[in-house]
Image (cartoon, rainbow over all chains, first blue to last red; front, side, top):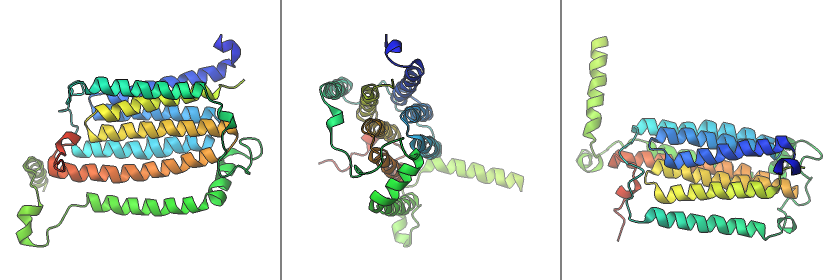
Length: 213
Length: 101
């Protein structure tokens, strides 16, 4: 019936995107191993990129894969491997009694409310964004040109603000991840929380280097 | 005839729900960050759907900015996770209870 109402390729594309997104999302929260969660996240993001493509957001689909599935997930994987895979936390153990049920009920109510809202509203009569006077989607120029025009004219101030935000984020990340160097020898004991388990690895590395040299 | 916007909106709502459930139930800070990414992507999908429905490029521009902010957020957030892991040797948020009253 659906296939009769809509073009079969469109339905297939939507079904593929939906399966990728939902299976990936459930995988993210169900997997025990954080690495598997990150891989499921990639799957979900590919589904979102497919949904973007199907809705004529070409540039965003490319950016989704490059920025999210490329940079962000690689950053996640890097941190997971850097910290060591932490399997000690079993996802089937509930830290708080009944938390999972309450969370499930809350999420169900929220999603059901959203869907009910969508079913009973007339979205097309809503208010357009600040670029109301701009060109319509995918009629005149292509998607990237339109997005570029929009970003560098209507939203130029926000664009410059994101430049500042990125600089702040980089500086903050460097500051946070930097290993603290004690200046005062008296402060050493208080400042550094010695991780004894890491010493073994370091000594192993030294041994290997000694053998090699 | 193209796929109606409601299908994509329901898909985005489901994705948001899964992400919210993960943030509330999982205890590892890394997984919670991934679930926040899921929720952000659900909102992005909604924006793109409305951009198509209303023929307004503003929705796609917003998604562009959301991506930038998400990248910045992940950078700083993972920096915090690494800094906390140095002190605690754990990424579980249950261990971080020193500020409780």
